[in-house]
Figure 1 (cartoon, rainbow, N blue to C red):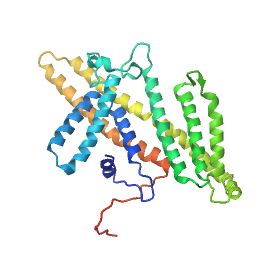
Figure 2 (tube, rainbow, N blue to C red):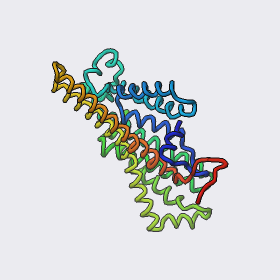
Figure 3 (tube, helix red, strand yellow):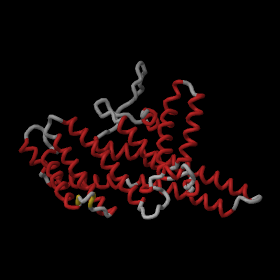
Figure 4 (tube, rainbow, N blue to C red):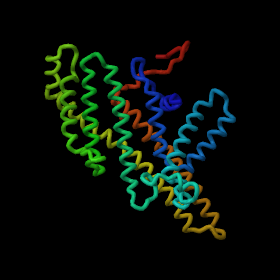
Length: 320
């Protein structure tokens, strides 16, 4: 089901590059759920998708099945965060209120910092996806010594993850385990492995000296800084999802201020239709801008994907 996304973007991995369809689709489904984040919107998409499936030809059903998957994820995330058309009132109704997980609720729950929890989830998703890329690269590069470079990046990645938790979220420990003392050892060990093995081509000592070249040291250091920004980049899932809820709640408040009694009820209903329609359009744009970007740049960059492939079209004549 990842194929419609690749077709939409017009991108394909090269013949000797990774097929990232499974990881791409899994991560993309989570990204879409968090970016749209509204169970009400998800139900609209789900209804339209099922209607389309009942009318579509067999060849056109794959993209609609993808929409069903993404819409279902949106409904699930919206339900557990208590987001139904951006209305706190609807979220308080039964049985909707029983589905909410307070630690990640969109609307403030007494004694719970849901903002911090969702931001932490974003960072965990980020370090998990980027770690998968480095582990894939390690096994793909074996038995070459260069494979250990990717273990270095993995170590550095987790050191930077703990650093981000400390700097951005102010989290320094979990279950009595202190994270801060782990940052420097993981980062130093990781950078050492990168320097030692990033240029390995068969002669260990000669290629190690290449890694100690000041230019290569600088380039690896800049790549390390880039890895930190890659982790931070996943915070966009929280930011975009929060803005979607805020926009929906704002239009709800404006409609309520106009009122639903008398002739002004027409204006209130139009306000809701236009406001939520605009929010849905913005959410769909955000999926392209942010959801696909995290897969195509941050994750694919760790794998060295150049998207140099082209679709398999047998018996087709290619024009120069």
